[in-house]
Image (cartoon, rainbow, N blue to C red; front, side):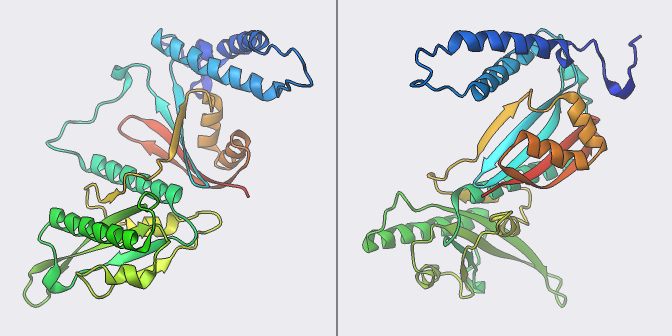
Length: 330
């Protein structure tokens, strides 16, 4: 029978205390060996920062080794996503063995919960892509259809946007604008309308199109030949949330599909993962005390200001999750 400990803390988990003592000692030894400074005045080394880098690299390697050797359990992992001036932090449990993850009852096809999860993940990727690639003065265009030009299906709608992009590229060439510098990303939104008189349904489709802002707005609206209620706006990012608001609005109705696409030259948000960013005790404290999240986040990510956070409980694997948003200070 396993021995129970208060607050789910098990001192037999070596990585909690002994591992970190070992890491500090070993990283200091490695640091002394690697930092050979012949002339302190000419070869200045930021001792504290270099030591911290050594310590963090070693800590990740040691924790991964302990996981592989099945000597630790109950680890939280941190995923950090940087997009423009935005920073997202996800903290989630990392299970030691696959058998430790509670299994959900198998259903035919993808479960409703999984579809929601997939949609949310896709939406977050889209929002981060917009924040990473677009800013002040770029364009956001709503592309609509007249009744006669409504596409018959998803593939036809996508083809219409692709043709629109080709026309833009041809126009850019005429105007002497670089094709390489032109970036775009768009979403497709479905609205199903039901007639109160006949009961028949009609699918309305429109697109939200973000692009580089070095072209005339009116010209870009005119180049969309399939609708008359097109609307374009210059983007003016919010100080704290950048373009998160308009990007969320543009991706509000995904319908369970990959509802967005973009040019190949889009920069990808920078994603890093770590076992050592937040210790188990710190995570459990943040879960119980919401105010602790702001303090811990701003401590771990200097130069960033805390915006908001939420704590979630996954009933399928019985794990707690933390999601936090931050913005880079000017």
